[in-house]
Length: 338
View: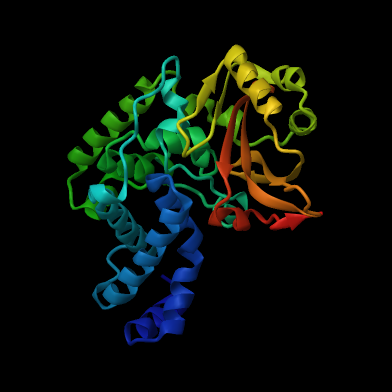
């Protein structure tokens, strides 16, 4: 810590709330993202972030500086999340995958899955993970990765995020969890094996899903929006991979493959709302559209939810629809459009 940080810490330990705010504000978004990866829910992550900061404030007098302030905050956040997950009343278990579903990406199993607005990633994506990290920070927020984490036992989930995403050393993670380095390494190997056993490895698809930045990818996303809004089902299908999926958490809906997806879209088209509008945004490092519906007799369109697209090899591999939620305001889109 720098001398100014030591000064702020001393003031905060004497009860100066402004100094505490100055100390912890730089870590807020990365701690929220950490909680989101472990919990899979934006709202739960926000709640656990507040619990983390409250716990840090109450326990600040006991912080002796033997670890960095950042590592100490991660210790509190991780253990708050694990305690939350241990309370079975607060979180349902994943349901079994539907027939024919690819287990590694069946988001419908994770009824609590919510998107994470990209605007909140801006302050954390440039952070350098530790030397032992296997994932880039932004890659490890893709929906497929976060969904896959939810199938791991909580302790394995935490170990994998701390080691492979954030790059903490095994001895650091052991201290955070009150464990030993051999136990941490054993949990990490089991977690990696479990992820890889869920069909095609979630990790292997991150580069193609996470960051559509090329002109061709932007064109692909624009063509999807145009075809979807105009009920051009064949036009949408032409943009999809052969094994593309549609899911709508928390609904147990899951359609995979061009035939099933096409049948679903045609049925939706026959019972569609009269009017849609899309506003482009991003979530989970992926292209997304906030969608707006206009009720009969209304002039404006009301924000109703979000579509998140997963891209692979120049096509659309997944379409995940979320109903409106508190996280959507963080995507920087208006409540109503004309």
